[in-house]
Image 1 (cartoon, rainbow, N blue to C red):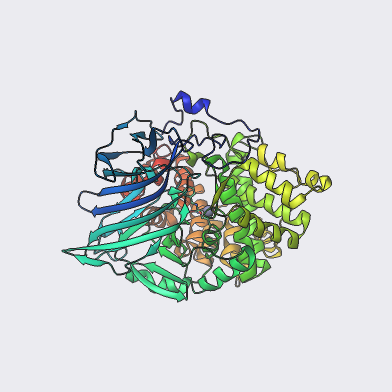
Image 2: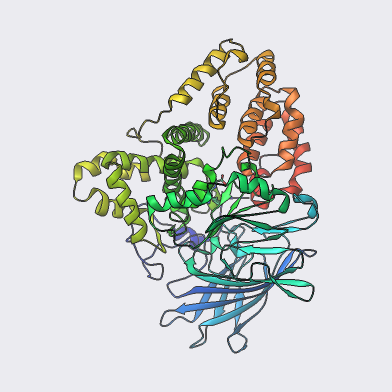
Length: 623
Ligand code: BES
Ligand code: ZN
């Protein structure tokens, strides 16, 4: 997708790096979200009531959205975000038609839907249909599911895709409550990121109707829906897992610690404010590892390793119940406030639940990955290594690198180590209380730190170098060192093997998934064909079921054109659609002299299985 936009008013509205004052989104001084057409300081959506029917043959959701509008004095219209929506009518609460206009299409943002607001009107009904290509939605044929008998539908709203299935103000700074009535063919269950009022649905003719409501306001990217052959298993009093019936046992086993995880997070961050916490395991095409939809995290089945070794992903999504869902990045350039704080909290939850050594391994893995990422982005001066990243004219997806995650988490670790854990933990809890159910900009965050963490202590503030961390590229030199004795031993093993020791001489018997990941990542140089065969024969790497270990091995296999692993590579690329695994493997293939034909052949087979989020990334790579 071209990343240059030809919309002058959006470009001119871009903010500089100077700190604008913290402000409510309704205030004219609030930062403008360059990725939304909405003008919330005139009129803004406060509640969305959906009534939609899912047509799996046509791949269309159709029905209506009733929007509650808060209008400022003098407002004469409300502007919504839409993309690829077919709008049939717009009416007021009495059913009177309202004048509306769909503006010119922008390749990235879609079309503004401007609706005239006669005096007193505060409720509008938009009757509409989605298009079969709606980017937020993936409609799966039965063959693309685990059970193979029923179709499946799921949505992915973040960052700016909700507008492809709901006409609303699609900006992270505009919080809305929502309710929904969803009609699906009987035999399917619909679930949403909300309270489920009719868990088993209510039969109406040959359809099933499901009702939902979320009374805590959220940004629209968190409105989420899935429908399919979905079963439920309770884990604790307020936790459970949803999955296709044939996946349910494995999912319930993997997530046995879910209730304890919520308790651990609460002890660290304050009360969990969303009621239930459930995890939905999606079909394998889900393009992300996880998505923090409120009350119902969406997760890839590739974390079902069988040994709970990849549950840090759930800790991450759970942490977003505070950082992201409770306190939300005001615009997508503040994304690091969602992901950096969450990645830090993820490590703290993992440490509290499974011990310091496990957390240290995750932190070291993340730091090495960050170093690779900074190199990939162009080195320590590259603009995309800035936390407060410039997304002018770009897809917010371009900012979804490891930088907001790992550099952001490192800044929080530095803050913790600078003031001490006790003081930092108290600060973190108070931060979530102060900004609960609100959004926050980067400058407002820095102000909050100065006021409530470092106080008047100029020496402390100076030691942190906050401005450099947030507004300058690269990793500042006061980044805390990370270390894991276990991973240091693994590195020594990797060096010995690269230097000629046989694989069997390595003491791998007790290695965890994280140790295997680090070992394989550390074998970055050139290995001989016999070394590859030795590794594979000794450790059965091509036959590994753990997705992270297999992925790390397949990257080595591609770089060395290790033939015996190629059928497994093809199976891996055609059996799951997680972008984090797909992109590097296709990139690695395209970078070899033998790989591009293979990449194109496999991609042609696999592309229909992938979600649009993945194909949008991969289309320009596999050409
Ligand atoms: N919120 C993100 C996923 C996301 C980010 C979707 C930006 C769309 C746009 C989620 O919390 C996340 O970070 N998922 C990671 C896993 C995590 C353990 C790092 C992923 O999917 O890889
Ligand atoms: Zn996240």
